[in-house]
Amino acid sequence: MNYPAKIEPPAREKAAERRITRLADLTDSQQESIRRIPAEKDIVFTPLAASRPNAIFTGSERYDEEQAKVFRRYAVPVTLTALLPEPGSVVAIEAYGKPLLVSRTRSDEFKVFINACQHKGSKLIEDCAVHKQGRMVCPYHAWTYGIDGKLIGVARAETFDGLLKSERGLKELPSRVWGGVIYAQLNGEVADFSPLHAQIADDFTALGIPDAHVYDRKVFDLKANWKVVLEPFLEGYHVQRLHAASIGALFTDAPSVTDSFGVNVRQVSGRAGYVPSMIDEDPNANIHKLVTYAYTAFPNVVLVASQYYISIMILMPCGVNRTTVHYYMLTPEPATTAKAEDVFKRSYDLIISVFGGEDFRAAEICQAGLTAGVPESTVYCGLESTIVRYYDELEGLLER
Image (cartoon, rainbow, N blue to C red; front, side):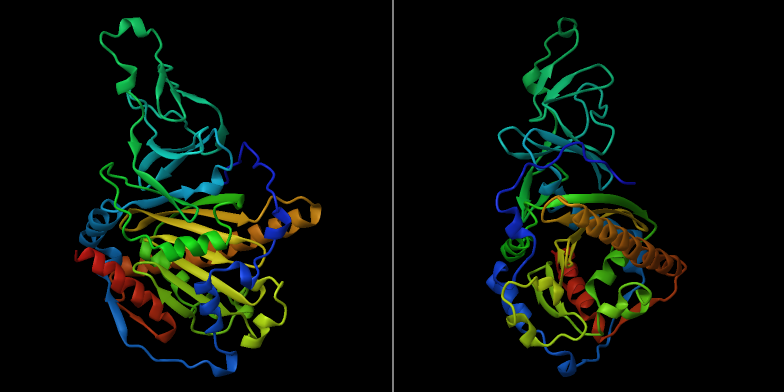
């Protein structure tokens, strides 16, 4: 489903300067990782013997453990700040099976609430569009709330004995903005942001995520375990095969330069024909013409940087074999010319067909076999070593 935005972002100063990302715009750590990418002819492939049991993708015990020890124990991502570009805006998000409201108050604070009236639990906003408004009215009995969560009006208040509006504000969840991603503690307890790493937040900021424009977005409801959906974004083994008819020719079977920051992974690889000297030929060139960044930010945010846009996905587990993917295509600014709109539209159509018609399709057909018990264990090759590194870190959290 595509969701129309009801508000336009304000004009940004220096927008023209952010139309591309130069090498110098990146963090020192990002630049250092790029300089470690070998030339295509110098790539060395290291064989790997690693596996994981079928049950991590199909077992209810493992799913329940992940829910208890990861998705409820720690703060998790719900949406992006870019979706709410102006103070005084609010959006409803269905996240991890919970109805949420995310607002950007007039004092420029981001807040996350349960989307439920404190009278009888009715949703206040039923669609998923972005709204610019100062208040929210319950469609059931017209209780009225500010987008800061305060209850400001009760219909026929004189008929309630002892009702205190100050005690009936919306249920707020502890939350934090991290590199342009809004995290919330879903169980409502004291927030634990400890798996979030400052380097990833700095990298996201350098890529322009906090101030980007949401060109479009889409929600996918997939019949697959969230880790099956995640795996292709942690490896390059599938690219020339699964994407042979779309983007495969742009990439080689090159192992990425990978850095782990706890349960956060940064991968960078050169595009086809890459040699290290290319990055210094033109200091003002768009670095994403030469290299591709892919991140997995704790625990389920995927970022893939492309030449004209950045894709961000939040993979929300909703069952052992069900995942809701919230996809956002970000551009540095709104399209201001017909040519720019054409480029963005073609880019969006392409990436939806690649992710939706290829990566997500692969996840669903894999889940079908896994659910049938085949294979009993999944094996990984040297081009998939980052998957194993990620699982090692994730399993470390489960053991705490």
